[in-house]
View (cartoon, rainbow, N blue to C red):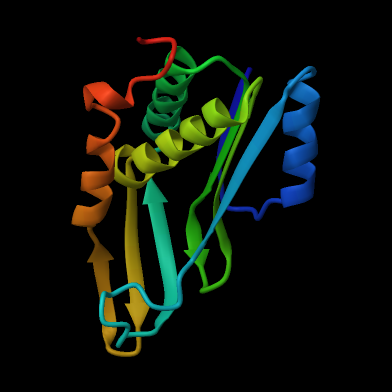
Length: 163
Protein backbone atom coordinates (compact mmCIF):
# COMPACT_ATOMS: atom_id res chain seq x y z
CA UNK A 1 0.00 0.00 0.00
CA UNK A 2 1.50 3.34 -1.05
CA UNK A 3 0.51 6.84 -0.07
CA UNK A 4 2.15 9.95 -1.51
CA UNK A 5 1.50 13.62 -0.98
CA UNK A 6 2.95 16.83 -2.40
CA UNK A 7 1.87 19.62 -0.07
CA UNK A 8 2.59 23.05 1.35
CA UNK A 9 1.65 22.06 4.90
CA UNK A 10 4.12 20.64 7.38
CA UNK A 11 3.72 17.04 8.55
CA UNK A 12 3.84 15.32 11.93
CA UNK A 13 6.56 12.65 12.03
CA UNK A 14 4.88 10.68 14.81
CA UNK A 15 1.53 10.66 13.04
CA UNK A 16 3.12 9.56 9.76
CA UNK A 17 4.97 6.75 11.53
CA UNK A 18 1.73 5.57 13.17
CA UNK A 19 -0.09 5.67 9.80
CA UNK A 20 2.68 3.65 8.19
CA UNK A 21 2.52 1.04 10.95
CA UNK A 22 -1.27 0.93 10.65
CA UNK A 23 -0.97 0.29 6.91
CA UNK A 24 1.45 -2.60 7.46
CA UNK A 25 0.26 -5.09 10.06
CA UNK A 26 2.83 -7.80 10.49
CA UNK A 27 5.78 -5.61 9.52
CA UNK A 28 9.13 -6.61 10.93
CA UNK A 29 10.78 -3.27 10.12
CA UNK A 30 9.80 0.34 9.62
CA UNK A 31 12.37 2.76 8.26
CA UNK A 32 11.66 6.48 8.13
CA UNK A 33 13.64 9.40 6.81
CA UNK A 34 12.91 13.08 7.33
CA UNK A 35 14.87 15.60 5.30
CA UNK A 36 15.34 19.17 6.49
CA UNK A 37 16.13 22.38 4.62
CA UNK A 38 19.85 23.00 5.07
CA UNK A 39 21.20 26.29 6.34
CA UNK A 40 24.10 26.13 3.88
CA UNK A 41 23.64 24.57 0.47
CA UNK A 42 26.84 25.43 -1.38
CA UNK A 43 29.93 23.27 -0.97
CA UNK A 44 32.04 25.81 0.90
CA UNK A 45 29.24 26.87 3.27
CA UNK A 46 29.75 30.57 2.57
CA UNK A 47 26.17 31.52 1.64
CA UNK A 48 23.56 31.10 4.37
CA UNK A 49 20.21 30.09 2.91
CA UNK A 50 17.39 32.34 4.07
CA UNK A 51 14.64 30.61 2.15
CA UNK A 52 14.18 27.74 -0.27
CA UNK A 53 11.21 27.85 -2.63
CA UNK A 54 10.08 24.64 -4.24
CA UNK A 55 7.88 24.54 -7.28
CA UNK A 56 6.38 21.55 -9.02
CA UNK A 57 4.07 20.64 -11.85
CA UNK A 58 0.91 19.22 -10.22
CA UNK A 59 -0.03 15.85 -11.59
CA UNK A 60 3.35 15.21 -13.20
CA UNK A 61 5.18 15.31 -9.87
CA UNK A 62 2.80 12.91 -8.16
CA UNK A 63 2.94 10.54 -11.14
CA UNK A 64 6.75 10.55 -11.00
CA UNK A 65 6.78 9.84 -7.25
CA UNK A 66 4.28 7.02 -7.70
CA UNK A 67 6.55 5.57 -10.38
CA UNK A 68 9.56 5.73 -8.02
CA UNK A 69 7.54 4.01 -5.29
CA UNK A 70 6.33 1.41 -7.81
CA UNK A 71 9.92 0.64 -8.78
CA UNK A 72 10.78 0.14 -5.09
CA UNK A 73 7.76 -2.11 -4.60
CA UNK A 74 8.84 -4.26 -7.54
CA UNK A 75 12.39 -4.56 -6.21
CA UNK A 76 11.58 -5.31 -2.57
CA UNK A 77 8.80 -7.06 -0.70
CA UNK A 78 7.27 -3.96 0.91
CA UNK A 79 4.10 -3.80 2.97
CA UNK A 80 3.56 -0.03 2.94
CA UNK A 81 5.23 3.15 1.69
CA UNK A 82 4.54 6.78 2.55
CA UNK A 83 6.21 9.72 0.80
CA UNK A 84 5.51 13.37 1.55
CA UNK A 85 7.30 16.19 -0.22
CA UNK A 86 6.67 19.80 0.63
CA UNK A 87 6.54 22.68 -1.82
CA UNK A 88 6.34 26.44 -1.38
CA UNK A 89 8.54 28.67 0.75
CA UNK A 90 10.62 26.88 3.39
CA UNK A 91 13.24 28.07 5.84
CA UNK A 92 16.37 26.34 7.16
CA UNK A 93 15.42 23.62 9.61
CA UNK A 94 11.95 23.11 8.10
CA UNK A 95 10.92 19.58 7.23
CA UNK A 96 10.96 19.14 3.47
CA UNK A 97 10.54 15.41 2.80
CA UNK A 98 9.37 12.25 4.53
CA UNK A 99 9.96 8.76 3.21
CA UNK A 100 8.69 5.80 5.21
CA UNK A 101 8.91 2.14 4.31
CA UNK A 102 7.47 -0.87 6.12
CA UNK A 103 8.61 -4.37 5.27
CA UNK A 104 9.13 -7.78 6.71
CA UNK A 105 12.91 -7.36 7.06
CA UNK A 106 15.11 -4.40 7.99
CA UNK A 107 17.55 -4.82 5.10
CA UNK A 108 14.81 -4.48 2.51
CA UNK A 109 13.23 -1.56 4.33
CA UNK A 110 16.54 0.33 4.54
CA UNK A 111 17.41 -0.37 0.91
CA UNK A 112 13.97 0.67 -0.32
CA UNK A 113 14.03 3.91 1.69
CA UNK A 114 17.50 4.75 0.30
CA UNK A 115 16.35 3.94 -3.23
CA UNK A 116 13.29 6.18 -2.90
CA UNK A 117 15.31 9.09 -1.53
CA UNK A 118 18.05 8.75 -4.15
CA UNK A 119 15.47 8.89 -6.93
CA UNK A 120 13.48 11.70 -5.31
CA UNK A 121 16.64 13.82 -5.09
CA UNK A 122 17.55 13.36 -8.74
CA UNK A 123 14.48 12.39 -10.73
CA UNK A 124 11.38 13.94 -9.17
CA UNK A 125 10.34 17.15 -10.96
CA UNK A 126 10.86 19.77 -8.28
CA UNK A 127 12.42 23.12 -9.03
CA UNK A 128 14.29 24.69 -6.13
CA UNK A 129 15.27 28.32 -5.84
CA UNK A 130 17.39 29.37 -2.89
CA UNK A 131 17.54 32.86 -1.48
CA UNK A 132 20.67 34.08 0.31
CA UNK A 133 21.96 37.44 1.45
CA UNK A 134 23.50 38.04 -1.97
CA UNK A 135 20.47 37.13 -4.07
CA UNK A 136 18.74 34.07 -5.44
CA UNK A 137 19.57 31.19 -7.74
CA UNK A 138 18.02 27.99 -9.02
CA UNK A 139 19.50 24.89 -7.43
CA UNK A 140 20.59 22.13 -9.78
CA UNK A 141 20.98 18.44 -9.02
CA UNK A 142 24.38 17.72 -7.49
CA UNK A 143 26.77 15.35 -9.19
CA UNK A 144 26.92 13.32 -5.96
CA UNK A 145 23.15 12.80 -6.18
CA UNK A 146 23.46 11.63 -9.79
CA UNK A 147 26.24 9.26 -8.77
CA UNK A 148 24.06 7.83 -6.00
CA UNK A 149 21.63 6.56 -8.65
CA UNK A 150 24.33 4.44 -10.24
CA UNK A 151 24.39 2.05 -7.31
CA UNK A 152 20.84 1.00 -8.14
CA UNK A 153 21.63 -0.01 -11.70
CA UNK A 154 24.76 -2.04 -10.97
CA UNK A 155 24.16 -5.82 -11.12
CA UNK A 156 25.61 -6.35 -7.63
CA UNK A 157 22.93 -4.03 -6.12
CA UNK A 158 19.89 -5.97 -7.28
CA UNK A 159 17.35 -6.87 -4.66
CA UNK A 160 16.61 -10.43 -3.64
CA UNK A 161 13.43 -10.33 -5.74
CA UNK A 162 15.41 -9.45 -8.88
CA UNK A 163 18.20 -11.98 -8.36
